[in-house]
Length: 342
Ligand code: AQP
Image (cartoon, rainbow, N blue to C red; front, side, top):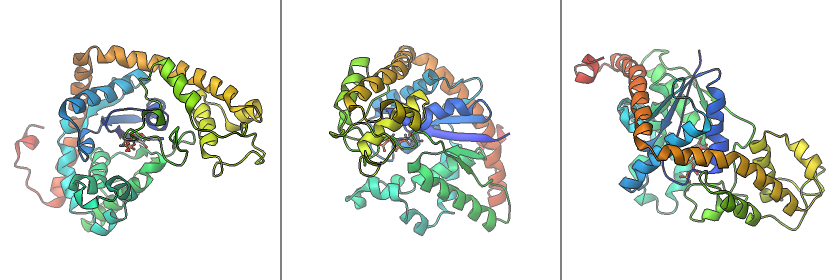
């Protein structure tokens, strides 16, 4: 059976893009795959995180998985730092990956910005850790948003180089799972930038835990233009000329599982205010219960911790023997206690 691995960083402000681009698909995938869903706290600290907020945000991502319908009996849910195989394998991959490969990563360039010299080394080698996350389980499939495609390519390059260098076919060549709808939800303030946790403007995103009034207000104020809703004919613009307008259509399609042609035939040519009112209704219908369930779960952190502890034990049980095989391939002696205990 195919094995899926994916994760979300506990960096706060979980938003509609994280839900539509990642978490909603996690729920679908567990129907016909063995799924491992991680809260990637090691990735999170590649940028500064306040320690109490990191703990809170880690539980919050786990709560979002559970509230959205990820079933902890079927799927493995855990936080990355709890399974040390991730960090151990990442070191081996740091010695496989080439500087030239990492230098090409656009996400590092974007996140480091102009102050590159001051970025953490962790941010630079983030893709090796991502490769370790996936390959520690020999996962075969990874759901990816547009923004993660390049990192997944690097995972494939690392797996191929490892296999070639050591004359093995140990690592599978991971396949991306790309979902059509809402692969990239854009900011409500600027349709050319992705909706992001780290955007300083809270009005740029809809947080999963926003209350209904806030959701309605943010959608009402979302940037559009004086033109009516596109009707698909092209005379009312295209995604490149009206990115904000088309983004809202994408969001509506993904939230309600509608096709874009259905939406355009219903709303095309009508004023945006009418469409926004309907979009706000659908957003509240979806996110309202999700946010309520997250708040309920967050009210009992010990229950979330119980799920994470159980998940970490299951993840360790899969990953530790795989790391043992990798140690054999590399030529490391398995004299450490973590191997004798398994
Ligand atoms: N705007 C988005 N549209 C669709 N999918 C998105 N994802 C993130 N933003 C969007 C998907 O959410 C998953 C988890 O992402 P992450 O925690 O690794 O964070 P990120 O990709 O760095 O983006 P964020 O959440 O906005 O954080 P910041 O502000 O730190 O960049 C991934 O599957 C991602 O594709």
